[in-house]
Length: 150
Image (cartoon, rainbow, N blue to C red; front, side, top):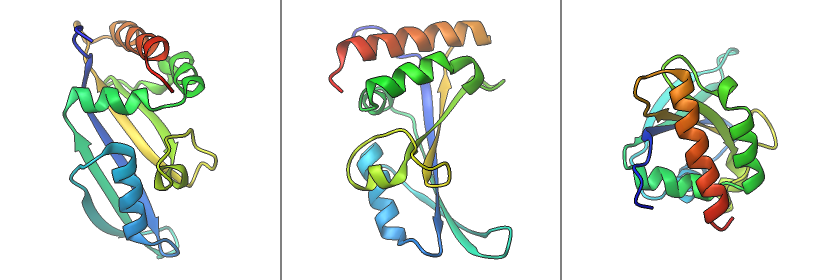
C-alpha cells in the first residue's frame, strides 16, 4: 500500500432513539471505527421525541482505508457502481452501514433504512472535479476489493 490514499477525512453519525441504549450504540461506533472521539448532541424528533446524535470525524487515512477494507465485497462493488449518485458537490461520498451489525462487531450494508450509521468520506481530487473523484475512488475500491480479505 505505497500509493497515496485519496481520502481526506471520514465523518459518521448515528441517531439514538428513546428506545435504544446509548452505551450500546457507542459500542457499535467503536466496533465499526475503533477508538474514536464521539460527540454527543441532544435533539428532538418531528413529534418531540428525544433523540441523541452521536457523531465524529476521522482524519487518519489509513484508519479510513482499514474501515473500507472491512466492508463486504458486494457492498464495495455496489458503492462503486452507485458512486456518481453517492458523491455530492463537495466530493463527499455518502453511504450507510447497519448499526445492529456494528454492535455485533460486523460491518454490513443497511438492512433497515432507519437503523443505520451514516458515513461521509471526503475524496481528494486534483482538480476537484466529480470525474477525478470518481476515478480516484474507483481505483481505491478496486484495489481494496482485489487485495483485502472480506
